[in-house]
Image (cartoon, rainbow, N blue to C red):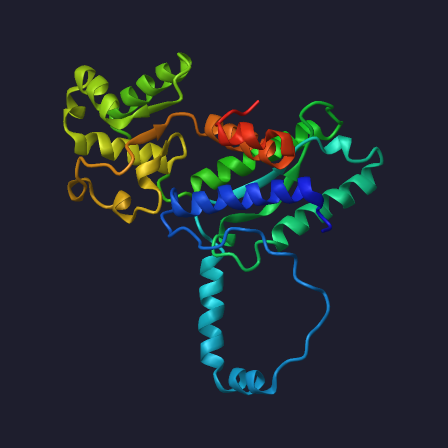
Amino acid sequence: SEFGNQSLNILRSIHLWISLIHSTIAGFPIPIEVSPSPPPSSTSTAVNETDHEQSAESPKSEEKQSRESKTFELLQPQIVLVGTHRNSIHAEPITRNQIVKEVFDKIRSSFHDKSYAGHLFEKHIALDCKEMSFDEPDLVQNLRQLIETLIYEEKKAGFSIPLCWIQLEQILEKFKQRGIYFVDVYQLHEVVSSQIDTFQSSENLNSALYFYHNQGKIFYLDCVNNQSAFSPANDRHATYELGIIILDPNWFIGCIYNLCSYLCSMKNDDDDNLFLGIIR
């Protein structure tokens, strides 16, 4: 493959997380296939005469599909691809920029037939985290402005947050400061209900947890592929399939990435350790 094994693993990770965003935060069903497809071939193919006749007979159908595709392109939230370690790719700026463009084009083309492709924002940014170039400050500023613009365009922009929700967020932040990155929802209910009267009701706690899950601040496993998570609070009950809340999604992503990286580089000698649950 053109990507190489390591690049393909990174590409699969990108598809995995965008499909999770598609199914949890955005509220769409989990895609059956989340593996990246190879970029479309540049070789032209013959058009079947029957297909040609059908397309000629139904211009209204084409119009409808065109409108649907335009709507599909605007899925929320919009996700910006940001490349890091740009300067390590090549010393010559023109060559480096061309390589960066080709990489982003390959990533984008792998999304062409995916149901979650509409989350990808049309622009991308590549910068360097270690070796600052002369254009780095402008790139960082452009990224900041781009993120602010996308936030303002989100459906929930301007939504008033109850004070008790902010207090809940502060409690969750204290957990993370103590090195606690996931909690059981029943235990969390006991803790917060003893400090905040509003959360003595499980429905009120659920509403706050769903909100912060949709914001991407926590990862609430009971929201995964669960359309009821986006229903009014009085439609939900205090019963949970998993009852696990990831307090730091970045920590969780890091764990998955480390696990996938280990499995990809695992030697045959490590098979026994893997079955025993030992990861070095």
